[in-house]
Image 1 (cartoon, one colour):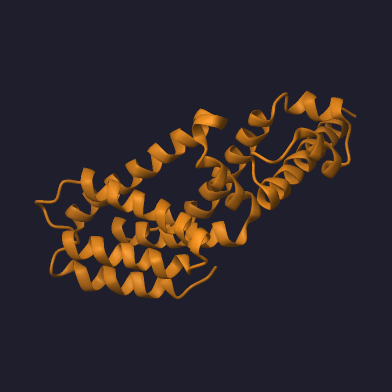
Image 2: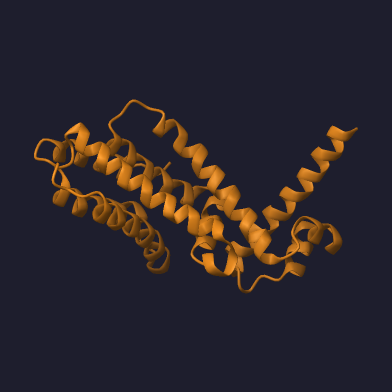
Length: 213
C-alpha cells in the first residue's frame, strides 16, 4: 500500500512538472501563473502547492530534471575510451540534439538563463559546464590534440560561451544550432589544436554536425 501511495504521489508530481514544462515552453516562465499550472495538470491548488510552494520551486524542479536528463545522455560518452576532446565535441552536439528533441531538457535549459530569478541550480550547472571544458582541454594536451602552451581557462570559457550563445541565438534567429556550434568548434580548434590533432578533431566536428539525434 505504501508503495502504491508513493507511486501515485510521484505520478502527481510529474504531471505538475509536465504541465509546467508545457506552459513555460508555450508562454514563458514570466507569463505562466501557478493557477495555469494547476489547470493544465488537472489537479487542485492545494495538491500543487503541497509539492511546489512557489513557481520558482517548480522551475527549479524542471531544471534539476533537465540536468538529470542531460547527465543520462552524456554518461555513455564520458564512459567511453575515446580521447577527451573527441568526447567533448560529441557531448556538445548531443546536448544541442537533446535541447531540440526533449521538451524537459529544452525548457530546463531556457530556465537556466534566468538563474538569479529561479534558483542556484542553474548557476551551478553553468559553472560545472565550464569546468568540463577546461578538464577536456587539459586532457587534450595529454593526448597530443591540444598544444602544450595552451592554458585551459580561456578556451574553456570561449567554448562554454559559444555553446550557450549558439543555442540562444539560434532560437532567437531561427538558425540551425548544429551549424552554429560547428562554427564555434572550428574557430576555437584552429587556435588551440596541434598540427596532428586538428584534422582528427575537425573530422569529428563535421561528423557530429550532420547528426540530429
